[in-house]
Image (cartoon, rainbow, N blue to C red; front, side, top):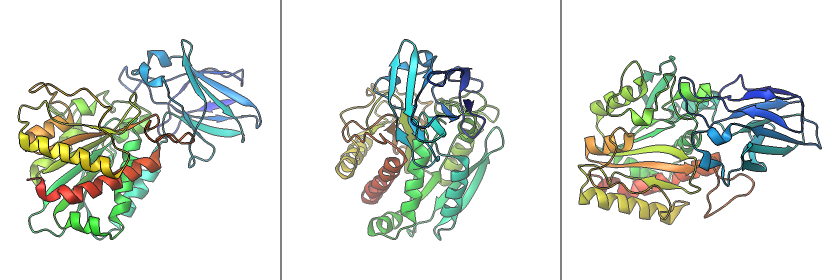
Length: 374
């Protein structure tokens, strides 16, 4: 059997592949960082009809060991159709099993969003008459960081920003952006209502280096971008610096930062209640956003992060920094790596298609709320 990870978003170390019934593996650490959790590898030489087990032996030492409880890995024979496979966790690591149907299969922490698909998404977006490439930043390793501007029809539009995949292993975030861009291609009444009030500013992928390298959490400098917003630098976090410069130029009336959460099997948001500048106006906007989103999709409000105490927010986080700086509605939107326990799907768990559907639901909510943002 051959195990490979020398490709886009690949991450695995082979300890011993001599026994195909139990292949011993380890997850490699993020480049220039001690974080690790994301994995993605190709197994070639499977025997159809035979069950193969892949043991990720250092999973208990990973960044979020509690995340493995109730988790099922994903596999694919063709890189397109991803499905959950039997997965157990114990002191010996994370054990992933597959009753092979073909000689070759991929395994990953979540359905990967490739750089090739990212390039195709940009082509589709820029083919739309309302979308332009407003600016383009650069990652540390020289990968492009496009800022897409979706032009509405208002003479003084609200400025709504959405950024995705600051944490590179959270691939559901760019699936979300694909769903958003696909809806932009459709001429429906809600979308016309939104664009009659607002322009959209989209960063489909904030951390292209980290994703390509197979990182979970950090960029090529080993920096967690979602802890860099108070003091970004050209040498360690140019991705954040670029977005802040563009925000200063164009303004912000609403901000959504799209993420995935390793441990919590629900869709939820984290807001700015701990910001020094949090006001009753912002509180009312947050509550309305949550209630409207809960009414149209898989969102819920019972499960999520503990709320920050007043004045105790970490302003190095994008959501808090933007909300404080621009006195605007700002949310971190979280999706699960596992399944959504309120509406489970045993075959796929939470996946790319459901991430795309959530994006379409959020646009419906924004269409109703755009006029209230200021």
